[in-house]
Image 1: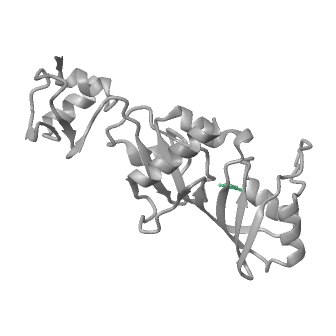
Image 2 (image 1 turned 180 degrees about the horizontal axis):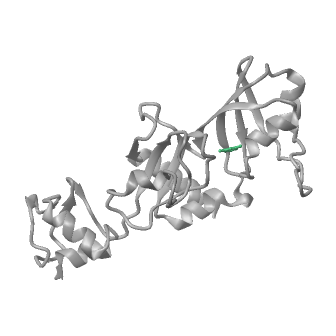
Image 3 (image 1 turned 30 degrees about the horizontal axis):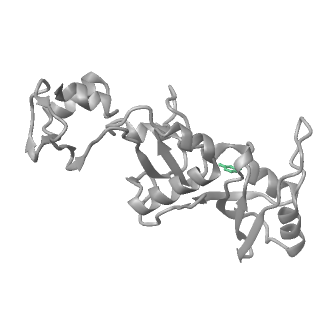
Amino acid sequence: MIRLDKYLCEVNIGTRSEVKELIRKGRITVNGDVCKSPDRKINESETVCLDGQTVSYAVFHYLMFHKPAGVLTAARDKKQPTVMDYFRDYPGRDLNPVGRLDKDTTGLLLITNDGALSHMLLSPKKHVPKTYEVHLRDPIDPDACKKLEEGVDISEAEPEPVTAPAKVTVIEDRLIHLTITEGRFHQVKRMLCAVGNEVTGLKRLSMGSLILDEALQEGEYRPLTGEEEALLLTYRNSQQ
Ligand code: URA
């Protein structure tokens, strides 16, 4: 037997004060009945839910976020809005964005407390593909596509290796889908710059097996579906 508030902390729902607040607000049920007593003793056979969803040990949260423009990919910032500001009321601890999108980039950002998955998705050795919708200043030509696919020199102050082979799909004259398997700083913008063009709009469409749900408006998030989560985790496990 364990106290309800302690149990909720242990399954990573929040800090002691956060879970007490959830209990006070009536968001926790035990066996289907709202329970407002943090000291209620819970045993293993009982079902504890938060907002109708069963909580259990080893709670990992996997959230698909449609990042809007104008928001930093950071935990906190004194002056500017950050992606984690959208999750202040979300009852999960240690949530972090997986990777970084520039302030003006929109699109898919995975938010999770699963450090191992995050590490795998970001590891340069794993070559996880990321596809971007890239809006361009000038029409793209076949020669530029070929260069982008073969690898380009994006060195600035310091020399860097050329980029790994990429995939380009031309959608319109000034709109391509670019799939890269690295995650260097401002990589897409620098790749287009290297072929004499300029990115005027950038949106991430996918990362590994995860595809941005277009039903999500910018600034909205939702938990991954069971299928999305299973696919992503299979991907992780098979790559270890
Ligand atoms: N490449 C960029 O240049 N910016 C991003 O935000 C992501 C990839």
